[in-house]
Amino acid sequence: MRRLNQFKQTAQPNAERRKTCLQLTAWTALLALPPGHAANVRRIVSVGGALTEIVFALQADADLVGVDTTSLYPAMAQKLPSVGYARSLSAEGVLALAPTQVIATEDAGPPAVLRQLSASGIAVTVLAANHRFEGLNERVKRVGELTGRVAQATAMQQTLQQEWARARAQVAQRTTKPAQVLFVLAHTPNQIMVAGTDTSAHAMLEYAGAINAINGFTGYKPLTPEAVIAAQPDVVLLTDQGLKAAGGVEGILTLPGLSQTPAGRNRRVISLEAMFLLGFGPRLAAAVSALDAVIGKAMRT
Image 1: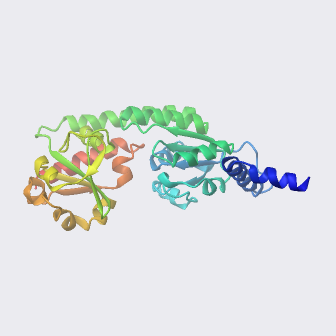
Image 2: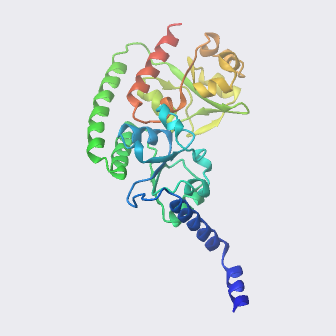
Image 3: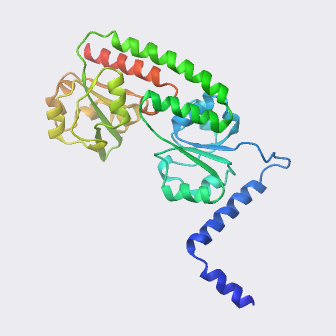
């Protein structure tokens, strides 16, 4: 009988064995919780800096037990246990925190890890990115439902709507010609990309009354000298992190082809913090106003 049991265990499919191991990891983490821990207490892992901001804004942060590395705001989020980079999660790392709920953006992954978490009995909710104000509104509603803060979410939506109206009115008041802006993604020195349509950068430029200097493709593509020269941008926009990785303004100005553009000749290189600029979180209205202001300042030089 013992040999038969050993044979059955060996013959168990790898996927089923992994599922069993993950479930054991989850149960072990739960058993390690302090005595008297209420079974119905929410234990949330938030994967996505903008989602974490929403959780804090809804005053549901007491339920957070872990966040990803993009969750930098508010500063208190950085004190929580990290589950790593949003796109390269590990099931074991998440399960070690004994979560009851994982809330993630659609950029989170790998998909196999999210499936493993779900198979382990963890409620996994993936929210659409939707880089529009309407998308933010929907995410606030869903996070409110998932955290039991529906009333707070409704109030927050009303506040966001008022802030958004003010930001849009500010942009509409500008009478100068819209600037042609080239967004450069340069978080790694050996991979310089530019943003086309259907990106958060493109949406932010539109909201700020600027024009994306790159068109003709969607998503991000490697920067080429020919594309830069053809685009003739007035301004080059990066994230703060990208500008630092690229060697600062001087480093960006050495990009092939940039010296043959108005942006290069006039040293018009600007940046904003990555999650603030591209996260489409609760600070979206403030980000649009800030982007409008830094583009306007650059164009006056």
